Length: 250
Image (cartoon, rainbow, N blue to C red; front, side):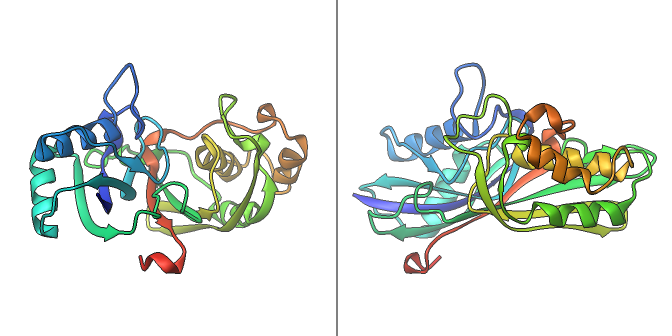
């Protein structure tokens, strides 16, 4: 039995997230079906993390096991021919059996994309979050830095979050502006349910000058979801990378 590591990209608009759901299509289910058709047996696929309904990925990481021996090109073309057009495997590599896409990951990285303009976009519908109000971007950039370091993110996780503890270490949390686009780039050792979307919601409210940058300290101290603001929409969020120890040569 050989373990295979894959990178895949997907537009999450039509899916109820990465993980298999009883009430709707998921990316994991589509990938498992495609590989099962290709290999003529049931295949289990394990992802590096979960994404919410409507969230996208430019480089999601996953693994599966198979006794089949194919060239990399054959794996990719064969699986992609069975996948819907909004899911695509980009890369594959043979790994030792001790590799695990989820449990061996030491960090994960997301980006959140905001389109800040008076008129809503058409071609990027569901791929960005549109904010028509004027934003104080300088304050948002300053506020983003407050999320760096080790913190208790109780205030910034969903009420339904199943994680055992809310402390996370954020390596970087940077907001940059490119014309009408605002991009939040955040990397951490792990993320809580809705954590990035709640952080982005907080930054957008600061950008609208609903409260000062220093109010983030009050939110952290409260350790209560009710102390923070809105959850930003799913369509602007992208899973962009998972990181692994050097021994895996990824």
